[in-house]
Length: 471
Image (spheres, one colour):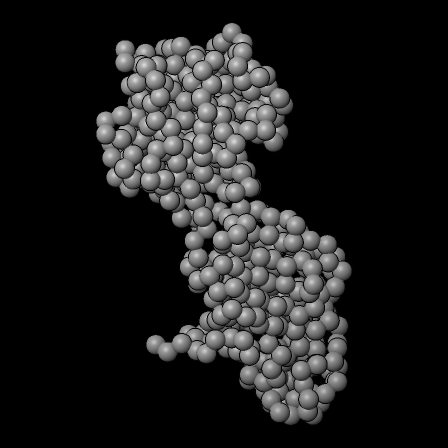
């Protein structure tokens, strides 16, 4: 224990709740250093935060990625796609990446020496090495975005201030382009660019785009992906939120955006119109962070898969547009909030208010907190209900009035006056050690007792816990 924080170093600590019918466990936790920590209540249904292996939050087989706020961004030292031939001689940029046909597809803008743009494509099996498809060149098109529509690859791109749509089933032969959205009479009358396409869980197609002159962000919807209806202007601050690319995953809508000198990430949750001038943004990359970003940024694409979050960014290297890669990994050190709830049949885990993870569980044993590295707990709270049971850690006189030290209870089922309203569990018996509470509660028994445990008062060190640090 140090400053009211329980520290577990390459070991484990245990809390025995006794026999309960339900509970809610909440605590602030963090991996101060190392690989992972876990919280379990028996041989199954263990919550694990893995920072170096799977890089995910899991409850046995169920898992979700880390929230973007818990990720560190690391840019590749060299660009992953550079101009390759005369048709790309003036630079490549505006990437969008989509999974299709068992591999990754990158669509991007290529510009020749005459400054004429075209949409090009490349494929990859690992998001690292890319092979160009020489058969695809949508002349005059730029700033592509794509999605897999059940075996049909749908590509949107900008040309002449209008957003077009084309499709393919094999990635080589594309349908004749049709207009998806034209300039409007209002905020986007000057022309449209930088489209980003997604289809929501309800089947709605969402199209985000930038306005040519102002850089403002617009949003439109469709029920079939063919013709779109404007929702309106989301952000008029083109200097702050421009060239948007949106993903939809475990945390809902997320957007990566670029400005001239930086790249940022913004969470949206369930709101597809989350981008505005006051959006909560997380800096991801700044100009001059890498050799290929010395001239600023054009646009970016975000990819979420089982390996985590990867960004592909349009940067400028020695005056030439290239595409770089930014990898992310969960970074130990930050505090998070863990909530475990058990209703008698199902254990539910939530980390930092993220998506719920569930696991079938018919009974629970003691809580076991394990760390590979150094984990810390603070502000622990347990709310639970149960029946009168033997206070297993007690070894002394029933119904004693002290703090349950050497003369604690032996097999009594009545409320110990040192307990805090909980039948069969003394707050001081954290980690299996009697004593330590000093609560002196005289509350009568209740049908649904509630226990609040504060780590600063009640968490006792286990044998494997590292000795307290000194100031």
